[in-house]
Image 1 (cartoon, rainbow, N blue to C red):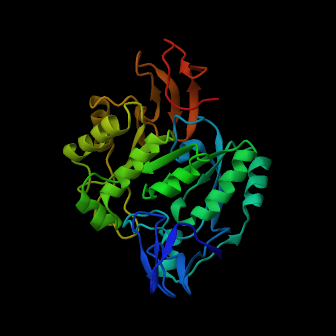
Image 2 (cartoon, helix red, strand yellow):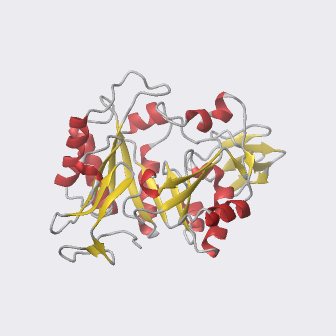
Amino acid sequence: MKQALYFEKRDDSVQCFLCRHHCVIKDNKFGICGVRKNISGNLFSLNYAKAIAKHLDPIEKKPLFNFFPGSTSYSIAAVGCNFRCLYCQNYDISQMPKEDNLILGEHYLPEEVIKDAIEIKAKSIAYTYTEPTIFFEYAFDTAKLAKERGLYNVFVTNGYTEDIPLKDIKPYLDAANVDLKGFREEFYKKVCGAKLQGVLDTLKLYKKLNIWIEVTTLVIPNYNDSNEELKDIASFIKNELSQDTPWHVTAFYPTYKLLDAPPTSVKTLRRAWEIGKNEGLFYVYTGNIPGEKGESTFCPKCNKIVIERSGFRIKQLNLKAGNCGFCGEKISGLFV
């Protein structure tokens, strides 16, 4: 247990300003995330240094395709989440505090995380699997140590972090994959338990802070897969972020509480990829259906494949100092 950051005391409660929910929490009660508790007028993080998962992953699994492709990232998580997505693939740990009244995890201090990451030759630490915002104090302390030891830091996030916390961690956070789950307020309210505008605001702040971002949309049939909504997402990325912000459109498979939608077809995923390209995005990627051409990185100038992928595996790399190996065009991102 560690005293939380970013809260203010009220007469009979505390108000949390870590994420955009701004929970008002009565004494002995929890925030929406299920891991931040008001104890006698002070807010505490109950999942600090409690690792529920740790694993060495390819960076492409995050997914980050224009951020040191082919490298590995030491991934850690603590239980809890500030969303309640009906299709969460890690619901057993993200919803554990709310559904099972449990906050489990192995005692794993930031110093130990860094030591292990260096030993297994990871290039970065990824705060992932659940939502890094809700174990922010743990991620923050770990990220600072990682930066001192020459490691990079990555968030895989739902994009609901408030402005001040994101600005505070900016010197240590190198990249993020941010979910833009849809582009309709009703979808976010019904399916995720959050507000679309909060995610859009966070995305724009990531860009303003010059943290490398890639955006992911899980394409769910009959929920967020219309041409209009996909065009709206692509347009937002191009006009409010940048033309060279990668967009990952990934296939949905029924899970958890969202079982009434079918798996995403190859045809639908290809349509989403084409919409992104037609809207003018340089880097659009398909995911969760291996073997598609959309897994590869194409040069925005000569349209040749500069990074050929199959699943999370790189088959061919045609880059020279971050430039296209064929025409010399600069490829956006961070490269070895």
